[in-house]
Length: 223
Image 1: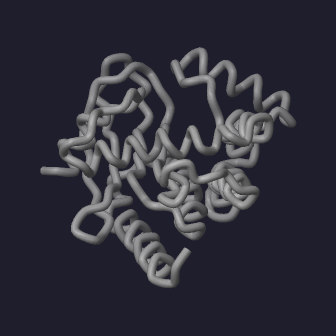
Image 2: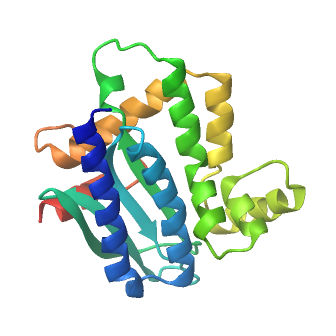
């Protein structure tokens, strides 16, 4: 990572923090904790030379069919911007996701290096680390969000929550296990994230398959 890129990414992280502080009154407590977790992934990625795409946090919804508010942070005009939108959802807990990619790893047949693998492992645990430092959720909830198999009770509670709230049966921990089992998975994730970035910020890019409403995000980013 060049000095210029490092400086740019540090400024973006500060912009993201400032943008959240200005708008956190719109967030519920649980959504704020989700932001902290996703910010941990973003911070770890950008300090390792990755490129920011978006950060999304969805408010919890305890009523079937109720309109749920979703918060979206994105890049525009050389800074981080914020917007929100509503959509009817089923009963669900607060949820978030963040997208970023390593531009260097997207060039041609760039080989995957041991450093690349370490970077992706660090990014995966970045959310857990940030929550442990700055979050206010109890430890069992933080551990459950990560998905650690070391906590049987936590896993059981998490399993029930997934059944009741239709949450995807994936976690940071399952992603970490997949990377350890198949390091080349890092390139697959990076390529998928890069395709999402291209679609959101490039008018001619084809929409990639995703469980997230990328078309809605693109409309908001370009509005």
